[in-house]
Picture (tube, one colour):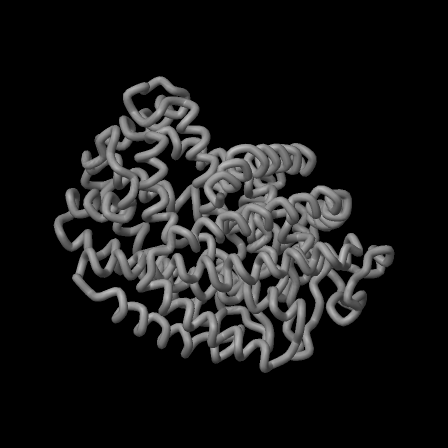
Length: 476
């Protein structure tokens, strides 16, 4: 039953709507993801900027990357290549470039309609902008429920099973032992609250991503002469010009699009929950930042994995896709030696752990849309810790199928809301563009210009003046 519904959702409805809206957002915004690509790197300068009691824009980026970058970047890419051929990677790239615009729109609108919680922390996401922007409380409740079930429980169980399987294969560590250790460490972090989650991601994500990229670059250096041929193979296979590889152009497109959407999550309504928690002067600024996280996830991390696999010579057409992480481990060890197998397990451990933290945050955010009860949050935390342990010792095919279904329904609801709120995002984007053209260094959102919107008055101020770049000296 789950397989039938998932095939319909992910093969037709979601793919068509996500790609269609992504292209529309890209064109209507005059290719916003490319116009502001340079500004995306500006966020790296804010790594040390903190505001007491709130997540910084950099922390929100790291937490978002932690969620987007997970087991799918190591195991999922391998599965994409085995099912759709190397050409699937090309379509993953395309989906990511289009998805950057979608992510910009959904994260910008999440900032616009965010609100301040009883603890003074910003919160928002699809449920919040659906209620405040569209007045559809029932749809907001449904989205919160889908977020809670999908990320808080289902996906956390899947992630813990993934790392337990990898460690069992590499180090012969029992699934139960991995589950207990992972649950205990995870509990220490989540009981520290959202700010501790942000600090953990602030440290783990850069270490995780940079180390993985460096090892991949080492492989590229060793097999440098073969890189052009690998890239050419990806492009030829994407258009069915390598019939022996994968299932031709149809399989390459279908698998590439589906794996790309799962990897970068653009349009699925998950990243806006993190984006709304950031303290930024203008909503569009966080939209730019979150578009960058899509780029990091797919264009950088997934490309590293795919090239390592193709340069290793391990991949052969017709290989089984079931053990995706095994293919990645085998490929890296074939180039650098057996330590590569252990490195993949270690990288996967960090990837999965930060994804679990991210999934937990999404579930808590969804729960707090229903209630601010501390008792409810406590019960939720205990259940998630239990689910992390339980997932490591289970066969999660049914749970994963259920999570896919709820995630698909979540995407449909979120995309409908984005389409209905499209004009609001354009207004906010135009305000940001206008200030940039006027020489404003740090554009500021003036709520007095948007009095027709149902904004939280405790969030957006009208007293802060934008920071303007100093005039250039006149040349004589």
